[in-house]
Image (cartoon, rainbow, N blue to C red; front, side):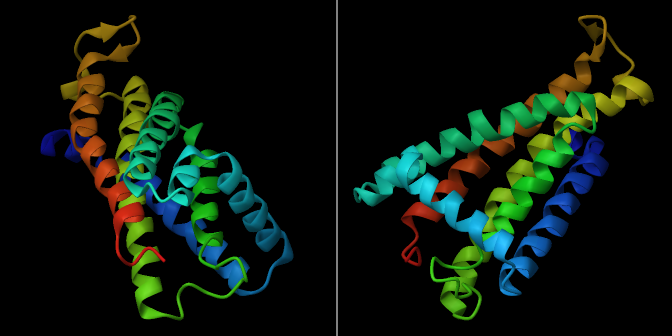
Length: 199
């Protein structure tokens, strides 16, 4: 697992950097009172409250079920498609940028006051964000690494090809990285919904 992460580290860092930049952009926009960002934030949250299974479970007071729904959504609907899109190298970056921006614009509450002004609220928000960004960066970076290996494969990826195209060893590295990604997503979701700081 450590070796797989080491091999994919450049791709992982570019994904993490994209998340970081667009999180900061989103934060800056809502804290500056940008109408577009605030309106999008409100629409997004309202839609989630009405449709997202995790939000619906949390509203019913079943935070454990909410955490499990959130975990499944992040893994199956979020990370896996982005990992696969990473085989084409550039495809996941616009998705990552948008997801990071969304992470930034929810740094304000429904009344548009900042979550960062109260220390407890700030720690909860920032830690939740970090716990989500780490496994997403690993998962997406692993996919991008498979794509990069198509063009200039290092010696450890010059082995048998799957479908005559993708390095089998690079795909194995995706599996090794996912062995860490899966529990990290679970920890992130449990923290988000079961933390006593989730107010």
